[in-house]
Length: 298
Image (tube, rainbow, N blue to C red):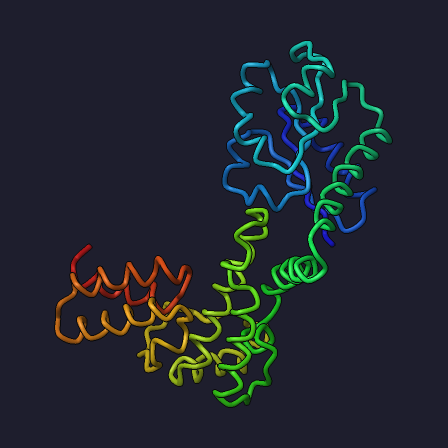
């Protein structure tokens, strides 16, 4: 499994050298090297195995970064020579998994990084075999889905009939539905949402005759195509129940369509918002909400 490590240091020299060292010595490793804590806030923090962070220029600044730092599964603190006089006891007080002072012992740092990554893997092993395999399946599916077109993602041939498209879509969406992962780490839950969202997206294209024709043409012209260009406006002829699993959400969506047909867009928006709250990340509902908001001038 790919290891993801973030590095936060203001000293560009140490930042670059540690990044290069880790990429060289840890197999299948991805590093995010940044000089400002704010750059981490836009990241999926919990998808990283650990964070290596320096003491920055003063304990006050370092502490201001703690709300972001503590979102990581673990962090390793490095005290710089021109930074505050930190001790291992202080580092443990703030929850650091390991503590080092510059100049670094590279082998000890590598050992500490490998230990925190191994601990995260062991934490996963505490789940029962079915749940563990499912969570590992989420990791693999998430890491590969951007490399696949919709047919590959749903494990279908290009000429698959609609009944097979629906069958494979439902199997994938049910397998990784976010509601099944309420009690797991938020990083896993987020990946389940993204997989389900991509499954909805794929189905909304392959089950729609107009979109499917355009998408197939895109694939013929460029086999490297992965996703549909939703800036292309086509009619949506499929029944809402084709992409909505939650029965109550489906009923709200059907009522919303009827309200839209009668011109009652405010009522339609209310129904759609309730449906969307029950069936998160459904691309069809998102399109209807966008359409209604435009009608209302929102």
